[in-house]
Image (cartoon, rainbow over all chains, first blue to last red):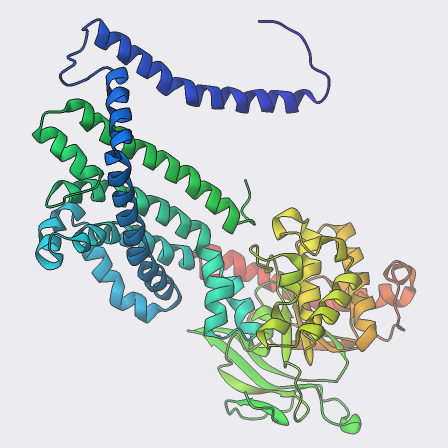
Length: 267
Length: 294
């Protein structure tokens, strides 16, 4: 190690180098894994029938990009994810905040949420197919139900955890119900609600892949399923990679969104 | 609430005459508290509190911790209801002004609003015109030295600055009466002194009726026109002490004045046995289960 000193605040340069190191490690670790994988596949240390070399997966990915197949399926899945998040998230947000603010609403809905929450969402898929058919409805419903629970639970907790003094201030300054919701309950619970949305969208991504494997004709889940049927392992990996990428990009975007709508949150 | 001549929150209680009724010469009191009682289950928090507070009076309430002074203020603020007795707050007919605004103990400004939006909160809640909000909030942020920090969020401010925002919010709302619940108790000595002086300066502009709770005898004498000393639980009126010190007051100068020392001494000698009693009650309670805190 060299021992040169840099002019300026030593703590600052240390903090920067720490952050830079973290970032480098964050990028390097998946790349190192891919390199090992590639080498292991080429040297036949691993069975390429199950673990094809990343280079061959990428080659298939490029083909599928060219044919438009990958983009179409990705967009279809993303559309379902977005609609499901909206349809599940908005009612969950309103119900959750109402449950947090009003003990009677809470008394009515809390047992219902507590009883239905532990049901594995994937187990509802046959019922969703029965009710909504093979079309878009059942897919969007699955995402919606996945997003609904974390959001409703976090919104309730978020409101309940708001310091009582803020609600007293609202009463003292004669905030009506509407204003109590918009100026105290919603912003006060927003950080916890955001966490609920992050969790919910993650669950939604899992559920959309499952839902598309059964009774769908498009989407990344469908793509992975047909890859199994045609024993095209590379195509399967393309689907898995795509889902991983979507998950990663969404989490980055949600963190940015959080910074934008919760500017008062301390780092 | 319709604008009526008096807002009556009567709960019916017998009248007994152990209070300090002011000379009714200058008309109606700003606040009339009559035989107020508040119980929480078997616990009597406040008992037989009666007092008339004059318009424009800076009224201090001093008492040992747990004597129900915060409860009394919360009843005045309408955040709590009395068990019996009544409170009348005089509001001029047709007045647009809100009845009261409270400066809370501890951090009560919203972390999700900027300083400006916090200070404007009361006015916005009653749909005041934008021009009025701009003028009022601007004025009181200036008065509290916060103009530069209008766009800051509370987490970027010190404790003293946050309490200044809280004071600006209450004054900007232009209430009939101001209620203050130990607003400076969490601050260090230097900041406390600055804010006390600032509060007196702002109050001097309009001389609103203030009900101010403190456990500090010094603070009571610095700020108040009259001090109500309360007993340990159950909180009753122990005595009233007038503070005949001239205004405007300079707190530093006040500390040298012999009248100041004499007043502090007088209040302390009365309060001392109450504080001791409160401590004994606490010690006794510590033996039992810990009770619900206020």
